[in-house]
Length: 339
Image (tube, rainbow, N blue to C red; front, side):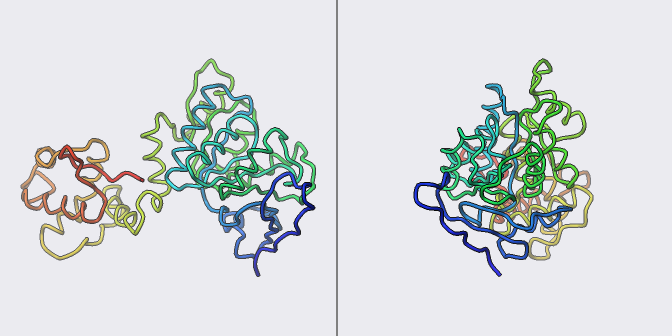
């Protein structure tokens, strides 16, 4: 069974142009992530590309966003889109709109879940945005039939879809209470990661974000830190072609997991790299270093993780061959960044 193409509207009557689909539970295109909901939608009504319904990052925030909130939404959504991560939001005014726009401008995909049917564009001022979402390879989606009018209760229900399809939810700005805060609640209920942008203690639109951080949400303090968070959340985007698996294996020992499998060969140098490769990666993530700095950092012999300088050099060489670290033009080694 596959998604059924919906009948085209008469020319000139459709508010959002593009291919239309009705995706029922059981269809291959129906997102597996939504099946985890206590009440999954029986049918999704979609305009755009069904392939856009993939796990991504939810970026949500206040409708009456401040300049700070709008800038943060644009910056962070664009960062995610450039990494190939689908940006998911609710198509509302304010932070949602800026997140969708940033994803489009970055050449990425974005999905907007609406509170009503896709033929009842709300807010009406975002008609152009919704068309750009579809034109850029994204999708506008609803669990309600095409002409279903949006109602107050449908937006809270819509938020559960945003949080469920997303692997993590980023709250840019949120008052208390607010619809944005409810999306974070839905993400927490689904055992998903919640991130938040800290704001001024004097700003009402940041009280929800600050409260989430106080309750344990991951704070997003700058773009570089955010990229590192996304690398951990979406390793398949940051380290394609299997490199993420190697990175995870090396980190597993450092973080208390099982010993990492051998990278290759059976010499003592390779065994040392298996045992301490995660330590090298962790050090280079914090601060790129030259080889002589690595030697100083990881004292060799009985007091260090490597028996000899040669073992450390072999480990660095193998991590570089795996594509986990790279040598910069200035001679320092550092972790490979997402492109």
